[in-house]
Length: 132
Image (cartoon, rainbow, N blue to C red; front, side):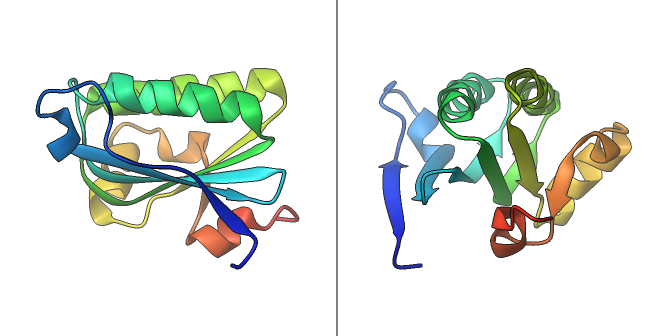
């Protein structure tokens, strides 16, 4: 992935203990795609940070891949952010693809009936395939 450029990495700058709970690694893949890799817990405290990150990226690129492989908790606030991000992407004519990557994320989406709402992929390379 020699053409991949890091857009942003590391902890949120909001202070407090939130940086210990969630981290975003954002990598551009050419002009048309960005992967946001989420590490940690997505709950009431961290969901607004995820929302801000997704709002920024959805506006910037036609394909946003949200890699949730390293999410250790996905609560209702996080699920609401994912639905809002999907709605925003659809309104813009952009695509949001999820890489669930873990039983935690998949079960949360299945239990709420949301899994079928999203475009999902088994891994980041598959998610970046624009022909899929």
